[in-house]
Image 1 (spheres, rainbow, N blue to C red):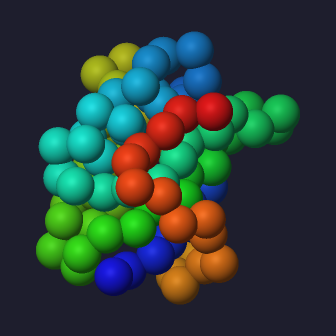
Image 2 (image 1 turned 30 degrees about the vertical axis):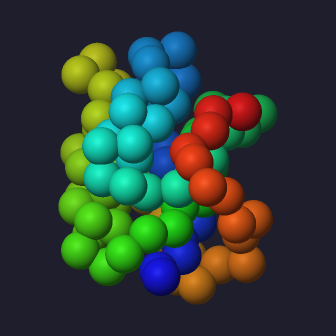
Length: 90
């Protein structure tokens, strides 16, 4: 099980980014959470198998929201994140 914490910047708030990230996670069997931050970024905590996680990370970087735009994405591997059995948006 791979665990990552991502901080995504760009046009990621007010464009359905967290909702479409949840849809993507559900499609790929990824569990975790997505949360808006006060600085305009979105923090994603995700866990899942290696191959689906690679797909998830790449599609988040490409912005799952059609009107969103990711300008940077910091990824922390093996982050100490809360274990979840689904993907939620805060």
